[in-house]
Length: 245
Image (cartoon, rainbow, N blue to C red; front, top):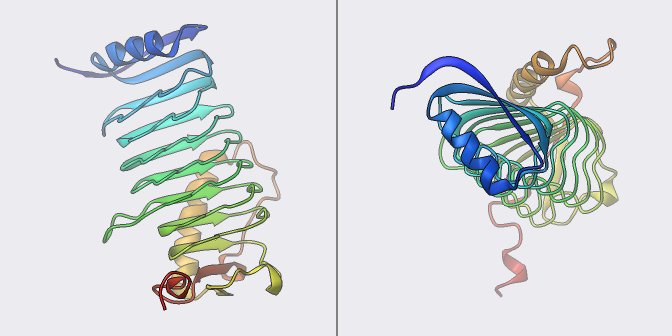
């Protein structure tokens, strides 16, 4: 079925998530850009959305929005619930608000930008293969266990981290605007100043963050990428001694 570059408005209201997703899929078969209005916690919106497709969501999408996202773009004008970007492969998610727990769970590619705070266990099990690098940018504070069991990818945190940051982390990097105290850095991890390459990465990602949210941020918002810190595993297998002699 051919598609066009126009957009169409779809109203969900209190529809059950199955009916809501059937309506969205039918609209996406005809249009590349869908504007969803009156979204009330329907789950799985934008699941496996492919490249060239875009959802603009007004309201609060339910759990697992953008799960398995496969190159499409989803922008939420409001808050999002749990597990956005679950196991996503590529594409972009933009949230003009905060998100719940487990954002980016096991994500394998693509980018998530959250304007405000996030819940617990965001970035858990993120993983990277060669040049496919998942990225999560959180503009506010993060709940506990950010980056838990992280195996690859990038997290940028502009606010403060909750407890148990990067528990079990064995790959990837977390860039922190506010460094941890020495006693808060878990065994098996290293906190250090960023280098020139790190600063380039941070600058590029925060430039995109600014482009998405500049009209909603305080006029004084700015950043100095060179002043960030990074959290990385101490070795390629920092926890090997816990499981083998």
